[in-house]
Length: 602
Image 1 (cartoon, rainbow, N blue to C red):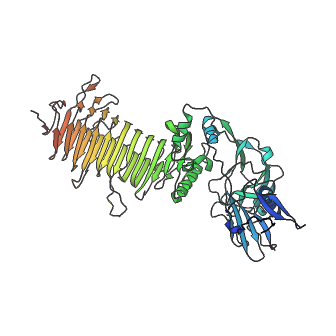
Image 2: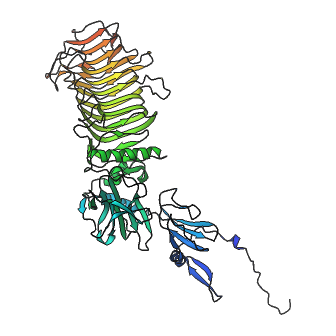
Image 3: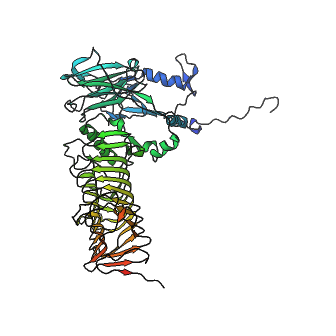
């Protein structure tokens, strides 16, 4: 090569060989050739802002002349699948995605970027350690310069409507305000295209926040820092505008743990019904409409959320639940569902057909003293649970269950009704009818009932653990009393019912326990039976066995405590019934009718 200088080897690669990026990250750089023919770099932050400035706003209804090779910024977004733009190639704008449309003269395309979600766990922790709650609703005046005789459509354009009005509310007048709402009669009379609330940004793009037919008479939104003003529509007559602010709540001990526990599987698994408009100040009609609509929506959701009510007394009529949904109140029974005097509601909560699905009712006071049939009715379910509730009623039953396999009820306070807990086996021939079997009841307290604490009709394998049966039955009416098991295990297929560590006193009428033509086996184990105590009146028998098989076991005892009296009859066995006492130390006494056997040990 002589005196020549060697040239280093250069490897030239295609741009396809470079690592690929799928987003314009902050502080990145792009190459750009300017009009002077020279190459420059431009920051990605600046590039994206330039695109936004160049992009023209577009509405779903726009059908004018679109400029070729131009960017357009959609003005209206909605939840997936998004707001359709029929004249822009049927492209859609979806909430949570920053979207730009591009028109090349013949076809449309779009660029989307998912908006960031603040997942800083410190902020979630702060919300538990320094909790906030919703303050009271406060009335505010509608603006004096509103446009009366018009309403807004979903393009933000006024339309003639003699019974309507619309106006503007500016964010600068809403310092500290977290929610706004308009309540009025007849909000279902303005059609599907009305916009009740629209939020506008500084660049005049907007989102429709509440629109369409509103049956419950409440158009409510939460304020958002991205909006500088809000447009509203309202009925001209009878409308009320209100605002609400956040208030500091007292910090509870172990508040973080309690909050996490109350939220179950995570933030996305909880739906606070007050965010939909449920309120202690609403009428029963308003709250019922909101709750039932939410139940329908969650039933259609592949991952249904828990419907949560905060502490307070909420008026309702008849809540129609859905399979697989959990309805829960605040801890320590601070949430009450009640109905008005004269209501035609049959129950406070009904699940007419659970379609062999699960479900959960938790942490509620059910005040059903004004219903026609009772507190809760559940039909045709599998593994349904009711827990931590208090039931008050003057009607037929506190809780009525039909066709419920493997369900569980625990920590329930029953007060009133003809029967506290009534179980009916599903006898229908339908393939979806669920038999009543494998049932578990823990820590049920029947403080008062007119006729019976419990009535079990057919089914099998019932278990009662640590339950209290008190103050029920009618003196002189032997058809009333404590617990009545009727025709359990009709084919002799299972265990009828087992009572473990239960307590009874103050029962009147004919019996504490009555087993009526049950074909399996039943057991009373480690249970106390007292005549008198909490509840006055007369009772004929402690136990009646009619054509059934019964075992008295363990430490079961007919109490001889000073405040109790002897039963006229401890055990009455009739119509071929078989009663076996497996512990000679059970004080059966001599005041018995019919034969029974006591186990002998050598």
